[in-house]
Amino acid sequence: MESNKEIYKENSKKTFDYQAEIYDQTYYGKHAGNLYDVIVQKIEKLNPNSLLDVGCGTGNILSILCKSDKINLFGIDLSEVMIVEAKKKTNSKVELKVGDSEQLPWRDGNFECIICTDSFHHYPRPEKVLLEMARVLKLNGKIIIGDPWALDPLRQIINIFCKFSKAGDYRIYSKKEIKELLLKCGFKNIVWEKVNRNSFVITGEVNK
Image (cartoon, rainbow, N blue to C red; front, top):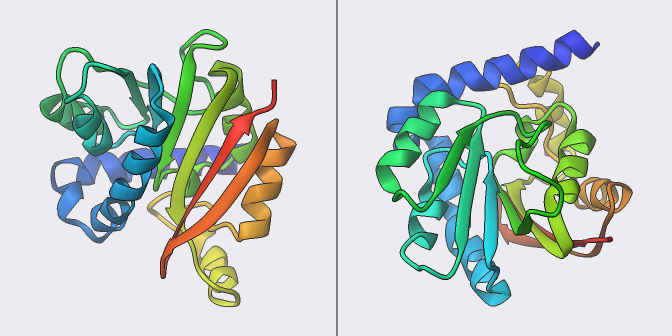
C-alpha cells in the first residue's frame, strides 16, 4: 500500500517535469491561475514576515510577492524542472528548493504563513503533509490551501478515476473532508470558501 502511494508521487514528478515549460498555458496551469488573486489578497491581509509556498510550481505567486521587500519568501516543489522555471520568474531573495512536502527541509517554527495552490490533491499522505506544515509554522501561523472542488456525485466519480491517474492526482476533497483533515492535524479557526465552480480555498491557524 505504501509503495502505491509512492507511485502517485513519482507520477506527479514525471507529469510536472514534462509540463513545466508550458504549464501556465495548460488546463492545470489556468485552473491554478484562477486561484492566484484570491490567495494573494489573503496573504496581503495577513501581512506575514515569512511565507513558504508548498508545491510552488513555476513560481507564479512567489513572482507576485517578491516585488515587495516585506516578506521573506521560500518555495518547494517535487519537480526540479518546475523549480528551474520558478527561478526564472523570481529574484535571488526567494529561496527555492527541490523537495518533498512530507519532509520539509526547514526547522520548526520557521514561517508565519504557508500556502499551497492546486497541489494538495496530489499528496498521497495528506495528514503527513499537514503535520509537516504545522511543524514549520510559528505560533499562530496561518495556512492557505487552494484546490480543485466538485459536487457529489461528480467528486466521487473523479476520485475513482484518480486511482488510475498517470498524472499523480490522488483525491479531490469535500468541504467536510478537508476541514476534518486540518482539525485532525492541529489547525483551528478553519474557514472554507468556494472560489468558483471548480475550486475552493481553505484557511486556518496552527493550534500551538
